[in-house]
Every structure is written in structure tokens, then in C-alpha cells.
Image (tube, rainbow, N blue to C red; front, side, top):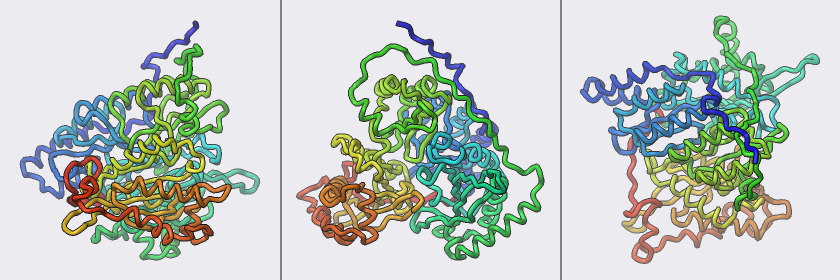
Length: 600
């Protein structure tokens, strides 16, 4: 049988931008020594550490989580291989893909952080400004460039924005962290729940097409969340940088530096009022446009990626393994480019082992016609430009690597933040709960139910919404509860959140003990199946309930609460001791938190 040759690894595509600076690794190592010698105080070192992407680990100063910035989510095969190597040498043999397209290495000894920074520099990556009071990783929808509904590809603008702002004095000491999200369309981005959200837009003026953006400002999730406001009908691409600078300058000048609980930009917008804030931005933009040097510009590379059909796939027609049809239905997206699909590789709560990273590197090199992968918004990795004729072979390769779980584009793939596995602020193990839900839903084959496809489950270990629970169809954030002297972990459940063109924050329904979350979700699905209309999806049905427009037995959130209440009554500890433990723990539950570092 004829078989085409696999290209050598040296033929794999290299990134065009080196984000690293090797001297930062040397400086970090030197500063750690000074800190250990007591020559730098704890708070000063903490700010320095965060600015360089090393986040504190739960209840200890001796370990860190290293957050690797992946601008626009673009990650290349040799970078995946390097991260695999670093995870084995300095971390726990696995990595974590976050909801902000970063890659995280957990439980790194503080003295080894500089070694990781050196390794990242070898492949053009950096952890600089992945934490701290700076502009964080600039995100871009993983479907930008292939989305059927987009007006143009926003990726070059996201990359250019990230390049302009990285290490820029403009944003080294903001009142708090600051986030940019670029989307492809209304459906596939989270543009209304960040500081600056951008959707590509084309308008016609005097017979000519103009490229620009729909820009939203002042959104964000946390203890108090807000949906962003649209700045103007159309922002020309020439004004993108001026608008970004103006917003950052206003936040830097007027943001609340005294009250940690209210120092995100969304609070400034809320306190000032949208109309006043908008007018201030537009005036400041005029000043920026008039005063910035001509050399201050975005370096936008609009040359399209080279798309070259890989030549590594065998032409033999082998048998297709079981599960292929289910995987194809629930993890792949048909691109606007004829004959190609994007594959959302499902991870459990974003976790991927070193061996799987290496497998993903080889698979990307062999199957993606653009030569790299994209990290997604839901703790997943997206492989794009896979030719449809290569999908069965790709599925076999993913199966061999343990990466062929179905359901990534369905309710069966919940998001869960790191929770008590590493976070100082977490009250529950949201990370493990997301895995438990995913495993149960796949066992029940709920990923194959099209009525549940557009619903989402998102879980945070505390109210701060790192798991984005407030924009989920069914969202949870962690806390503790008590029966007499005995504590047990529980979650506050919200319903009806969404992040499309009608973005909405979820409505609080009730508190659910951790060991009752799966039964409660399954009961909600059962109620939906019983009461739905012929053209309903779960998210549409819940949307009617939270707005009081449902006519069945579940007319309101209060009705839902009454029906679910019997499921959440706590038993005594003698009757059910397991109820009083969290997932991943065999000891009685207790709340313990440290100092958060989001604003340090």
C-alpha cells in the first residue's frame, strides 16, 4: 500500500514572534536569592514575582504556579514539547490549560521558576505579565479566521495588541489586572465580560468597505459582575490602538488603588456612570491621537497563514474505531474553508500530561494544515485546518494518546477553576467537581443529546468567578455550610447565564451541597425533558424560567428551588460521613484561605 511520507520535525512551522527576554530569567533568579536572604521584603517580592508570571501556591511561599502567556492562544508543536519537558523537570508532570488561553505549571519550587523561564525563552515564550496589575494575556477566539459568521479575522490585531502592550510602561503598575478579548463573532467570544472586548466589523462608507471593531468596555466577573457597554457604533481599525491607550490611561489615572475589592475597571465605570465614562474615553482618545508620535502604532501582520495540506497521513483505508461518530458530532466545527474542520480536543478541567503534550505536538504537526494549535476559552486545545478526509486517522491518534473524549462542544465538558488544589482563595475543589461531572455525563451519553448541546456548566471554587460561573447556563461557586458543629462543602447555584450577543449574568437559585451537585443537575435535565416545548433546548427553557416567561410547572426560579429542595437536605454525619467531605479529600471539610494575589 502506498503511504505518504511524514515531514521531519524541522519542517514544522516556527512562530514569527519571540515573546521572551532571557535576561528576565537571570534577574528573577537573582531576586529570589535576595528575597531568601531577607534583603527584599515579602510584599515587594510578591509584586515582582507576579509581574513575571509566578503566582502564589496554596498556603506556602516555597512553591509557585508559573503561568505561561500564549497570546491569541497560538501555540506551536515545539512549544508544546518544551512545556512537556519543563513539566516533568520542574512541575508535577502535567500542565493546565486555563480559560484565558494560558498554560500553567503548578507546584514549582520557587528557585526553579527561573529555570522554567530560561526553557520558555528557548522556544520564544514568556510568563511576563501573565499575573499582577498589568494587561494580562490578550485573548482571541480560537475560531478567528475559520468562523462562518465572522466579518474578518481579528487574530493579527490581537497579536499586534499583545506585542505593543507587553513590557510597555503604560501598563506596568495599573490599579489592578486588565483584560482584552478579541472575538470572531457574537457567538464565539466573551467580549462583554472583560475590560475591553472587540468584535471585528465591516461597514461601507462612500462605496468603500472599512474594517473596524465593535468595542465593549467595563465588563467583568467576580464578587460583583457587570456586562460591558458598547463604546460606539463602529470603531475604525486605525482607532484601535488610540482607543486602547485612552482606556488604559483613564483606568491608570482614576482607578481605585485603595480598595482591593473595588479596583477593577468595571467598578470605575459603574461609579462614574456609563455616559460620563464613555465621553471621557472619546475625549482622551482625541488627545492620544493628536499627541502620540507617528512611530507609536500597531504592527499588524495581515499576511494570511500559509495553509498547506499535511503529507503525513496514510492513504490506507483502515477500520474506524468505535466512538468515532460520537466524537465527530460533539467535538468538531465545520470551517468556512471547504473541506476543513476545527477539532476541540477535550481535556478534563484543562489538565494534560507531559506525554499527552508531546502527542499533541506530533498530532498538530501531522494534521493541522496551518502548523499550530490554538488554546480555547473552555480549557481545551483546538486543532484547526484538519482535512475532513483525515479525521478518522486523527481520531485514532487522539485515542492512542487518551485525548479522544467526546463532548467538548456540549454541556458534558464543564469548566472548573483550580480550586483548593492550588488556589489560596478557594473554598471547594471545583477542579475535581468538573471532572466528576464530565465523567458522569459521558457515562450517561448526555453529550449526544442535541437538546443539551448549547448549555454550559461552569464552576468556581469561590465567588471570584475564575471558573466563569456567572455566564453559565448552570453555574456554581464554592462555599461552606454547617450542620451543628459539622461543616460540609457546598455551592451557590445560578441559572440562565450566557455570553452571546445578549450576554446575561446568571440568577442565583439555591445552595447545593457538593455531593448533591450531580443529582441536582440531572434533576434539572429531567424537569426540562418533561416540560420542554417541541423546539426547546435546555438553555432556552432555563432562559424563559429566569425571565418568568415559562408556562409549565416550573414557572420561575422560585419554583425550581422548591422542586429541588428535597435533594439538598443535609443528612447527619453519622448517616452519611462522605457528605461532609469534598471531592478529592478523605478528611472532614473545613474552610481555609490565604491572601489572594489577583491584585498584588
